[in-house]
Image 1 (cartoon, rainbow, N blue to C red):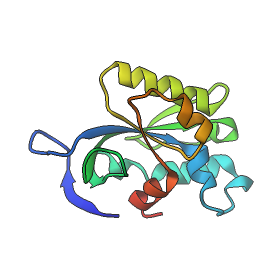
Image 2 (image 1 turned 180 degrees about the vertical axis):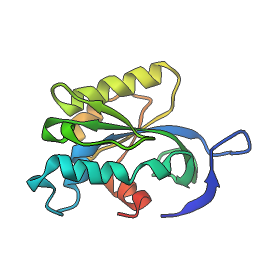
Image 3 (image 1 turned 45 degrees about the horizontal axis):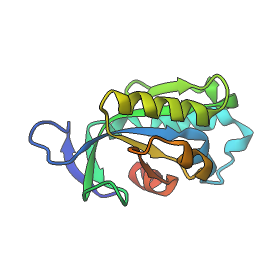
Image 4 (image 1 turned 90 degrees about the horizontal axis):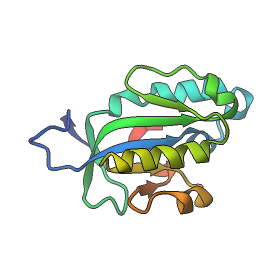
Length: 149
């Protein structure tokens, strides 16, 4: 992970702030580490790695408009059995009542409408096609690298 060593993306930062929305099922599925045997446990382990990213400036994914972005907030979307995961402080969790894709689309639209710059982490092409046109999108590879996973 290229971490630019800055915490708390504040006024002195030139990195654009982004809210990162994570398709947890998609990111978990990107590593064959046995997540399917205990989805809630695997989701909890993944979520536990996220809080330290809030306020950090990290290498931006392609198409983000600059070499670095400042992660202002992380929203993790859980679906199915993973909804039972325990989330640490510092990560906002959306427990999708039905499909995770619909919850991600809704959350992205809500944040964009509020003026937030949104970066969705998913490899799901169908989901990508449903997202707000202003949303940035990247795959799990970028997020895994940022997490050091």
